[in-house]
Each structure stands twice: as C-alpha cells, then as structure tokens.
Image (cartoon, rainbow, N blue to C red; front, side, top):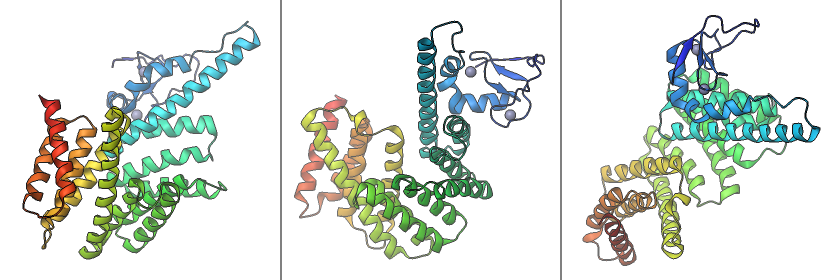
Length: 353
Ligand SMILES: [Zn+2]
Ligand SMILES: [Zn+2]
C-alpha cells in the first residue's frame, strides 16, 4: 500500500473524492490509480477492510472499451466488465460479512460501503440487491453504538423491501433479524422479540424449523429473554439451538467420513466464527446454571469439537472433544454420544500425529 500526494491530480477539473468519506481527495492508490483518499488514515482503513482484495479488479474494470473495433468485440468487453463488477460486489459482500462475524465492526464499513456503491451503480438506487449492504452497514453501526446511523440504514432497507413486491423470504428474514438487533440494542425488547419472531418465520419458510439459520433467530430471542431476566425461557430456546447445531454437525461429520469431502466445503470462515460464538455462549450459560446438566454441556462441547474438526483445526477439536469426554464420563446413558466423542477424538489424534 503506497500513495502519492498529488495536488495536481485534478487536471480536468473533475473533483476526486475520498473513497470513504467523500471529502476532496489528495491521495491516490498507486496500484490501481482509480481510488482516491482524503488522508492516509482513510487509505489505510480501506486497504485493510477491502481494497487489498479488489485493487487489481478495479484496474481491470476501469479499462475502457476498445475503440475502432468490431461491435462484437465491444459487446464482449461490456459483458466481461459486467461480470467483473458482479464479482466485485460479491467479494465486498463476503468480506463485509467476514468482518461482521468477527465483530470487527469498524472494518465492516469500507467493505460494505463499496458493496453498496457498486450495487447502486449496477442495479439502481431502489434495487433489492442493495438491502444486504444496508443490513451490513446497520449491523456494523449497532456494533459501534451508532444507533441512529443504524436506524437510518435500516429505514432505507425497509423502504426498499416495501417497494419490492414478492421480496424473497431470505431478505425478509435478514431484515427482521437486523431490526431485532437494533431494538435489542435500544432496549425495546418487545419489538425486538416480534422482529425475531418474524425472522424465525421467514427463515423457517426457506430453511425449515430446525435449520441452523432459523435457530440463529431463537438464539437472539434467548438473549433478549436473558436481558428481561427470564432465564427459563432463554434456557429452553438455548436447548433448541444446541440441539439443532448438534444434529447439523453430526450430519456433516457423517458426510465427511463417508465421502471424504474436504471440510472447507462444509463451512466458510464467517459461518464457523458465528457458530463458535453461539455454541460457546450456550455452553457458558449451561455451566453457570444453578442446576447444571452435564449431558447438555457434553453435547455442546461435542458440537464445538465437531465444528473445529470440520474447520481443520484439530488441536481445538481435541481440546473440546476431551472436555466432552470428561463431562459425559459419569453418566450411565448417552452411549451413542460417548461413541461419537470417542470416534472424534481418534480422528483428531490421527491428524495431529
Ligand atoms: Zn476520507
Ligand atoms: Zn488500488
């Protein structure tokens, strides 16, 4: 990452604006030469969040259509550029999601803004394709405590969804989940719960009631019930979530042992980080309960062990596998769980040798 200060970067009188804050720019990325910044801090923030991943792609997007060539060549160039723009949007979306799942909210912003800006250029300012970017921006702002900013992005998302007849249930589930998060942050727990209920409804229409996507909504509801000092309801929701994840992970484990599928195909990094957070949070809750349930804790530790095994982190898999084994040792039943844990430990040990 380097930049040249170039006060004459504006020979044709076109004002160059900072990629992040839209203020007049004095710096330019020396690699792509098409991205501008007001100061080194903004350049650094953009580079870390997203620019490193898209700098070269931006160069190729800005190559002008060949002049004096056949129409077919120009059409081809147009199609290729369009594909690259779609690719750019996809990369920005995934990177922003990765930062969201790591709770690195400051890093979400440049990637999500790039996502939003290019989606606007490509699809227009009212298109439903803008909603995922609005939701990422809202979630980042909730995480950063900028609730009014989050509210603004969510209003735009709601308005866009309202103007889109037959909007997909995936978008609706994501919209309600983010609205629920905002209302949780502002302490409006009743509205938060009703948004999460809608989230769960739309997610279950798409993914089924026991899917891990749907149970993300239950998990967030449980968090609200804890805040309302209703641990019993939270506990029963956590139990649902834990059981959905356990079933899902057992199924994935069966898949890899049967087909030899590589673990990368099961999870992307964002999903793994999110699952880890959810499972660890529930395990912690179980361990702090007045009436501990060792079999429940063992199941959660087993889930975490499977999650890490599927993510090719055998050290962590072994750590949680051993924890699960200790938790379940004294219990008389649970033979199939005991066997699964034993198999997992063998599998992880083999990889670590
Ligand atoms: Zn700036
Ligand atoms: Zn660049």
